[in-house]
Length: 116
Image 1: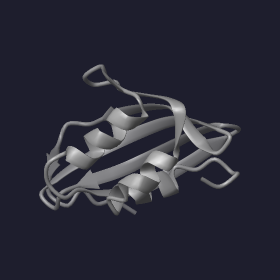
Image 2: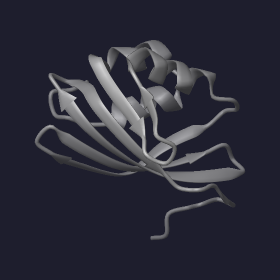
Image 3: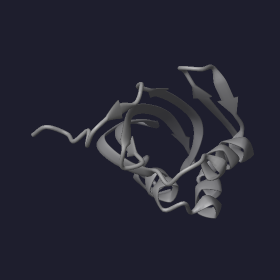
């Protein structure tokens, strides 16, 4: 990841299903949490979850904020029929995502386009 913390390459790796690149972006002591169900991940289990999730999903960062080593992104995740919105809160240490907390909405149907 670049020296300025960002989640855009992280999201791009998930969107393009580039699992090897995604793994290189996660710190050895990575810890992930999905708030909605309490599921936790280390680096390898996070990549495996993304890789093994059924269907073809697109991951689009809509809004991205950085403050020091903390990064927040609001993203749209869709399989073309269902849309989920996700808020991602991350700590980027030495260019690697070391801590990740995600909060997912319930699925909505339709395009889920951003107004504006």
